[in-house]
Length: 165
Image (cartoon, rainbow, N blue to C red; front, side, top):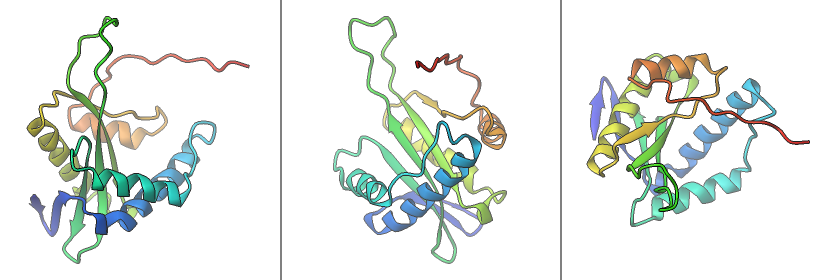
């Protein structure tokens, strides 16, 4: 648990599911505006099922942390989603790794909420043996690229793709 000025970062609980759903849907709307060919707004029920199952998982393979303002309102979240190790027949070395997804409500941006969440996610991951974190960012999302860059995330290669007709 971590405290910033009027901010607590803590593991999400089942009671936080409605807040997590609102964060996911608001984030989806923002990404839809970036690139409607890539992003969608998921069905609310599917998002409820996802976070309910994730928070009920006793093994705690993946993590969800929330930033709670002094008034009790959840103003941001970060998910830490573990990658599976590559199969034995592949050339990549296995390394415990995960992807982070950070979302902060628009009215809480610029107040250190995202930074507090990323630092907490890094501690959560380190405590579980995860040695590498990545953040999949759309190239047009310049604010997210700048944000993660300030936290030491660098270009980790190039992902090439092609649409097939």
